[in-house]
Image (cartoon, rainbow, N blue to C red):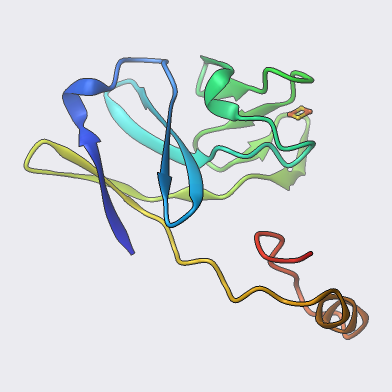
Length: 127
Ligand code: FES
């Protein structure tokens, strides 16, 4: 679902901003004139990535210095760990971000059963 974020003129190169859409925190930045958006929640311990330093297309988490690419969400030196990447577009000078709705919350029992069946887990709603 596309969400209107902010005027593109409010973004500056290599500065991250946090915005929230449907209870999901998103980290936005401008790199070489292009808008990028990833989840703002570090998968390590949940720190806000928008409080980190943006450099060379990556953001460094302020808590324990893990680095994530804005292009594919991959953690540097460990691409099995990723943050979600969201498509962006500019409509009439306003940045829009395509953030999917959260899946319904599952109980711990449902999560464990799904894991036992080998189903992928959406960690955004797993307990
Ligand atoms: S919370 Fe981000 S690296 Fe630890």
